[in-house]
Image (tube, rainbow, N blue to C red):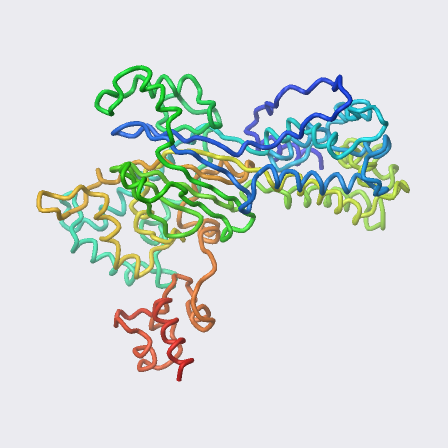
Length: 552
């Protein structure tokens, strides 16, 4: 059972050894080291066509500071190791403590790998020499784990299927094949629902539109990003020299109002072009992205903000879009659940139905097979009776999950959105009738207007690459793109539906509207609710109908 676990852990880190900060030397002073905390201030630099853009990024967890969330996790784990409830750890209790190296791997990959030769000792943790380990001493030990609990990673590459998806859908809509989409051609897209809706949900996924040749997800190249990537993220005030050089030499700064080297250097210390806060949460509908820069200041700097859901927004400077999001992944690589399943399956195989496992069950001829479980035996045996129950093991695994829970990762990317994604306004992986009806409004803002201020047609050149920054879990950062027709993508994207209970129940395809086919009443009842007579009952119409009914 050990080999599959190690294989998954290796996959989660891309087959490359984890790089952690150096282990600290024992303290020479009778005081615990300060508690290391995860970084929560970052900077995003986008090399836009008109000039570089710098966005200050503040990272939170459920609306709280990362330091507070990290401290809470350490307190939970500390209390579990403090078996006698004394408020400090004895030498015997310290023997059950996770090593910093194991904790750092757990935080970064979501999987626990024990290192029996790198376990903390009382002498190592006891800074004040009182033969006990306080919480402050315990928390100060986890330098590597704290450093990996919040990280910024290199940009991820484009998905190679994006261009194919755009080409296919553009050709499908371009009726006269002139390389442009007129308002009439975009309006005709609604007819595709009738012709291609094979699952009869009154929506179109990418497979229904283009066939089975486009779809799936691409896992990024883990070899790192080239310096020419047009986007980078790093800890605040720690811009790599390569990024500074590109900013300094990549633009005609005199045209940007900075004529001297000193003025260019001050670009890094002046207020950022925009300030945003990204708050991660275990539940998708509790993730939040907010712009904290004053709206009038943003407008003066040439920025606009578009936000259709709390966990995602798009900053736009000229024609350069910057998408910022906090996302809960589709559990592609697994996390606490995968770890729990691995160890409990190993335990069940060892006990063969018995109420507990002993050292004899895991030793002898079984030793290689149950090596990882043997390492956890003493720490997990909470009553130290030499018998490990399934409940004790499960409780110990809960500590793993508590340790890994607050970890976050910032992953930048540059993605040229597909035409499908641009039409998919609520990003649920499907095109609804309403989204197709309003498609022109979303596409027209991409094309520069003519002399008369109007947009006559949309070209493929208007679909600009988008700089993307995603806040999520470290173990899920490699899967940077899920095709919008995959069930996992749709499940992750759809939040809870709004509106009265009857509306949510009738909206069987969860597209935010109730069609005539979904409505169970009479045509007259439908028409009484459908105020704008567009053959769709919207959330607003349902709420208005309910409010009027309650007044009667």
